[in-house]
Image (tube, rainbow, N blue to C red; front, side, top):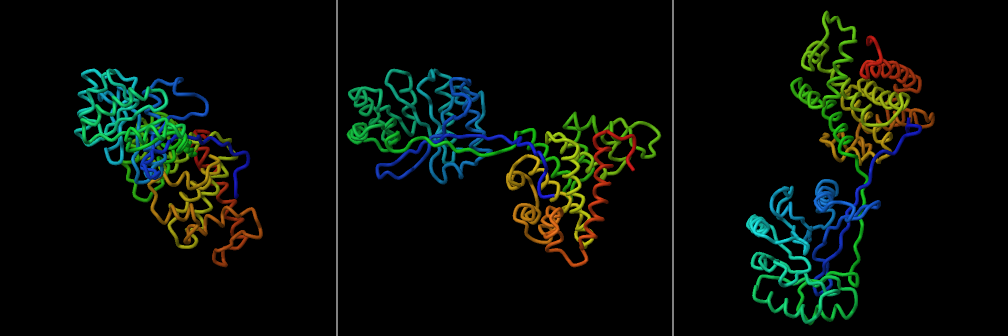
Length: 417
């Protein structure tokens, strides 16, 4: 049970580009975050979409500390973000907002950028050119970026003289691609430097779950936790129309002694019991989560049930063991490292460590179940009474239970047994 045969890899990769920004001592003081897609360019996306993708990937998938450490994080913003049509989902700490040279700086932009600066965000004016309208923002900006590659040196000198009238402004010489550009940046008195000569953009990639699949895993973890009450279960399920429909269908076909069909999720929970609903919905979520056949789903559920049976035989709680086995199997189905699944879930520390590291009694239980098909390792780390014969009986019981439960949860049976 160490792997699921034919498991599809249905996780996705997300990408963020970053280019370093240096001080005059060549120490990295910040990074500009850049849109990157292996299959398209910024030109293939509208600006808001590309900017939004950078923000989401940086702040929710990677985390800014991982991307930039304690350094500054420069992010290009489109007009929609600057005027407040799209909200920024992060605070001003360590962030510098870049106003692109392509943005028409009208009264709405001036008002929006002024408000952002008042909230504590630092502002950078990208590829600054006098007469473009961006000079309206000089008194509230913290940085001005000078294009050393495509701007005439005399024009750059005039821009620098103007900027020196704003003592809090810092100059960033960008597109430093040759030693001559570096010498020009020094001559102009730039405070910071950016360009291929010093550091090229890097692309950072991470394997993640799509939002819909992540939501399914979060729902499973929540439902299989120890402290979920009926009201929370009803709320979780009713937020998902597809799950609600299938739960009602499974409940109405179940031989539960109900004399009339169940017509609401609340009725289903009341009639058949909180624990049964929790397990059914978790298995429905598992079915939605992965593109797997019945054998693969059954393998995962058998693994989870065996973990529960062993835990209960050892006097340990069964529910965390079931969850640990389920999440380990889900990671196999997704073709992901188990920590890639667990790190996004609100799991108790001991449960997370058991699944990822294999520590504690629960970790030993999961390891023993995953090694079940290896006679040399089966039962390793468990008390002596958990013999290969005991495990064989547990496996058969878990298989029978998994088949019945999946049939009921997925609406494939007239009645659960």
